[in-house]
Amino acid sequence: MKSKGRRIQKGNSIKGMIELMGTVILWGSSFPAIKVVVTNISSFTYVWLRALVAMLGIVPYVIYKVLNLRNEDTVFFSIKGGLVTGLAFALGLWLQGFGTKYTTASKSAFITGINVVFVHLYSALIKRKYSLNLGISLIMSIIGLYLLTAPKGSGVNKGDLLVLASSFFWALQVILVDTYSESDPIIFTFFEMMPSLLFILPDIIIGTAFLNINKTVIFTIIYLGLVCADAAFVLQVLGQKLVEPAIAALIFMLEPVFATIFSIIFLGEELGRIEVLGMSLILLGVFFSQKEK
Image (tube, rainbow, N blue to C red):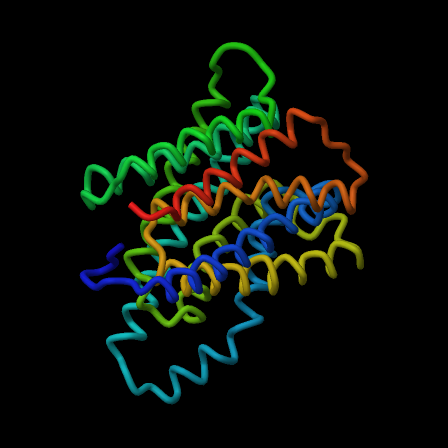
């Protein structure tokens, strides 16, 4: 397996996978927390406030790096990568939320997971790095995702198309992180959050900014910003430095698996046999992608 013109050692690849697993576990833990937040405040407030908390959490490090600038190229590369990737992230977040208003949550979850197909097309057509194992892993994971999310609703509506557009930007985020994975991960994460602050504009115009913010929302937003944003995205940059984007995208399909587990633990949701089968297929898909080619 190669990355950025060099061969990745097996040990390093495993290290990268562990870091990406940490990312999806943290992302998965965010779903019950997000549910608590968005039942109290608007989705616009949630997006920009979470980004603001995330940026404040690492601003001391960014100031330190700027004041003690030793490698200008790395810093500016990190800033550029973070801003470009953050734009894709913010658009994906907005389109997903907007589209989910017009479709079912289960369909939205499934269509969002389709981003893995876009990443695999990129690997096959652009990077020219693909294998039968990856193809089989992709099919297993998509079937598993379908069983896990059990998408309900017939036909295709504008909500489905909006969520599909969001999945393209989620895929682009994975590809861009791969492109800029040599960045300083903390500076990259700081600037990746910055475009999301633009959501404060419609929030102020609509008049929903700062409404219904209570202690529970504040503490939950702090967790989402510092842990599910800062820590998770730093781990993503570190992990994708060592793992090909096609495999990384498969690992990210474990996010709904962990989201389901955390929802069972904290929200009391139940899991049926079909959902267990779906989770198992996704896990097998990720495992199979690691077999020797």
